[in-house]
Image (cartoon, rainbow, N blue to C red):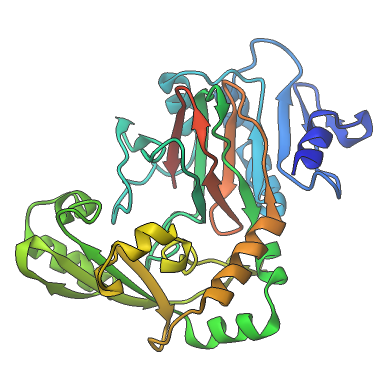
Length: 330
């Protein structure tokens, strides 16, 4: 990982292709990604260049899956909001929440509030849902003093690193998600669904093909099935796109897992679509596939990272100090 990081920092000139206003630092076999785009002249804003070149940006995204805009100094909420405005569609509201996020502008959020000494496992945003964002954009307002990277992984590589048997099981069975929402179990159902009306919760769950069961003391159990492996709608490549790893009990700290008297009380768990257990060995195999596919690079203040949410997954490294990363989805 450090070797890749060093190569990305010290890429040779032959990997750089220029235009009159920006230069493209293309990934090599060793650095792989992301494609870095940098201004050649001072004063060029990402909003200005993006508005004129959105077709180029999206074409490069379809190929590489991840773009890093560096040197455009997008270092405030306002500048990030201006860049977001050049997209054809407005950003999405964060629904069916799985972690607390705080809105700083219309559908622009602080990235997940989560203990700084812990990592956030690799995932593609909302890949557990019937509907999801196709694009996700991060902006570094302030990097952490130490750590706090947003690792990314090519989901095409993750798929390729899995054994044929594991791929076949997930392809045929899909994933079953079980989520228990209630006091003392992470977010309340009111925060998850952004409403206090149970009827609206039931309507949304019905639209998203979720089975719903209200329990005592305000607890809510949701169960639903979804695919694990997809063909990308533009590139037609096979991709690993699901939350079977992220939500599975075997990704939890052993002490935390043992604190629950029953695994049925866990805030999240995943199974194969037929209800059978995903084994610890299979979870370890998925973890290894992510690790083999993962690339880590340090945030620099003003960076913008643009991901195809289906082609790429992301996570978060532990950190020290204050960290302010914004996120928006389309």
